[in-house]
Image 1: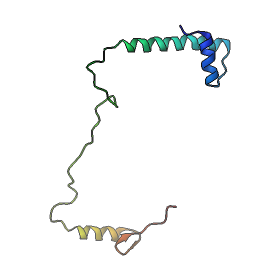
Image 2 (image 1 turned 180 degrees about the vertical axis):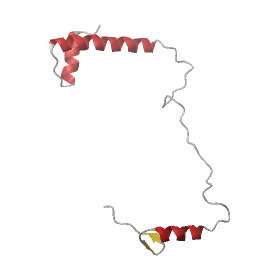
Image 3 (image 1 turned 135 degrees about the horizontal axis):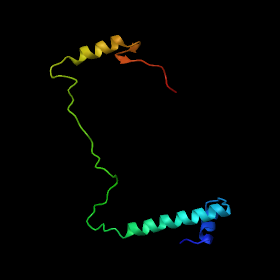
Image 4 (image 1 turned 90 degrees about the horizontal axis):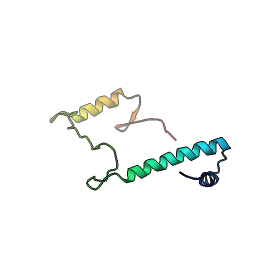
Length: 98
């Protein structure tokens, strides 16, 4: 079990002040945490690959099907420019953001 002096030292390093009841409470809680960590150290991890995330994370790609082959992209651009509130020289025009 972690000693009361160690709890006071941790509190001093953390710039925290504990009452006597809090010291006793944290002494029990810190001891329980350290016991749990000791149990984790006993786990056999020889055949376990290190990982950065608890689940497998991978990029998901999809085929770009928005523009069909042979579709007139200039016509689509023109329709967008016509629908925009303001445009200039073939570009959408917007207010400055800074």
